[in-house]
Image (cartoon, rainbow, N blue to C red):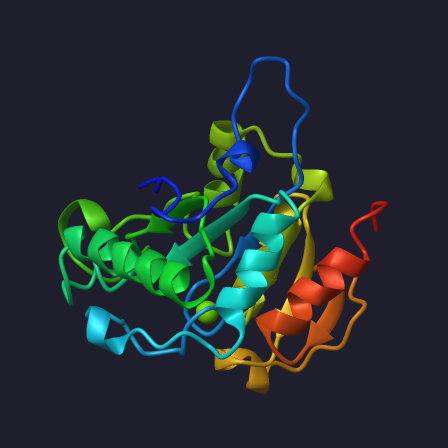
Length: 217
Ligand SMILES: [Mg+2]
């Protein structure tokens, strides 16, 4: 886990999520990383491979401006498989944060990742964990850390495992057609997945969330 301060030169530190202190829990938007914010690349390991999906930075900035915490939750089994060291995940996330800030003044409030795989890999990384999607562990621990209202939150993903993790955490979910999403045979609404909408990209998903954030579905 790593948490990033807002990049220098951006405003809005007042709306940073904070835990405890009697503050009301906030709904958040959980975003999968690969195929949602950036182009899907199998086991992306290097910053040169990071390509932000058009409009994604500005969309994240809209969430920042609305005071909605933005949390990235990403399976990184490339670590378990030995394709890249765990330290490289933070390198990629630091780079992604810089690109988003440079492009649109956008900020990811918190990153969480799961480096494990239940059946592949070696050593401590080869194990079944509650944090690897479709399990909801990353969403649950992010919510505990940041003081988030999961029932009012959203999970945006390009795979069924994203939607399953979101639904298991009590969030409403949105499937986007970028990344693997183009090949997923689902149409909203799907109650099991708490699937509220199927939309072309994260840009549409953010617009949809901002239009529909009142009430629980
Ligand atoms: Mg993905």
